[in-house]
Image 1 (cartoon, rainbow, N blue to C red):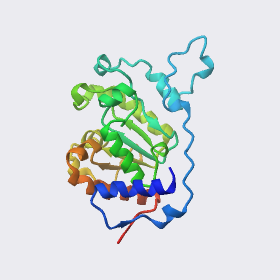
Image 2: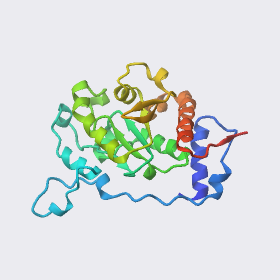
Image 3: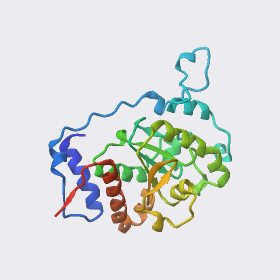
Image 4: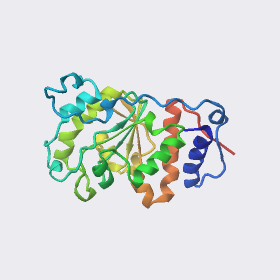
Amino acid sequence: MGLVAQARALLSFQGDLGLHGVDVPFEILTRRAPAEPPRPATDVVDMGPPTAGNEAMVQPRGSLGGIREEIGDCRRCKLSDRRTNIVFGAGYHKARLMFVGEGPGQDEDLQGEPFVGAAGKLLDKMIRAMTLERSEVYIANIVKCRPPRNRDPEPDEVAACEPFLKQQIAVVQPEVIVALGRCAAQTLLRDQTAISRLRGKWREYEGRALMPTFHPAYLLRNASEKKWVWHDLQEVMRRLGLNLPKST
């Protein structure tokens, strides 16, 4: 993204929040735009089971591609009965920041990639407001198949899928995880406290810093809550050493 476009993206999300008295940091306007990190095919490609023609493409288990191979055409829980695609995850394989949502929605199920619908577009704005690109973070979900009618994943479904999320986290090794929404936060933290009380407070998951916040889909229905998400994202920026906007 060019510097002007990056500044506009930052102001766009802040404008959504009603933060009209915020300056784009001088550092953003003067630094070179970061080169997009390489996105190896192991992040998103489903190579299928090994055959005589693709043994050389098989990925080691300690890679995202290896995890995807292990998942295969997963039938470990009942969510597989109605899915169109497994939604594995997407982004930079060594990202410092990882977002974890609840599960795929209809758009994600059809396209096989997380956060590509309306909530995904808002998440993209949130990421750009943090002076990052989608390609610089990693995005995944608690479960990799769409729950019917977008209901919460059930305990047996989480139990079948969470081990693969743990493996993804172990491979990516993010410094910070952002749990998007009640289901993601409560599942990762094993804490049934309301998301309104969980959000904005640092916790840990698998030894890594975790920030719970509201899900973008919730913000689409409750625009007034965006100010709290911006607060949470700034805390994440501080933890990662990213340049914060200056209020005027």
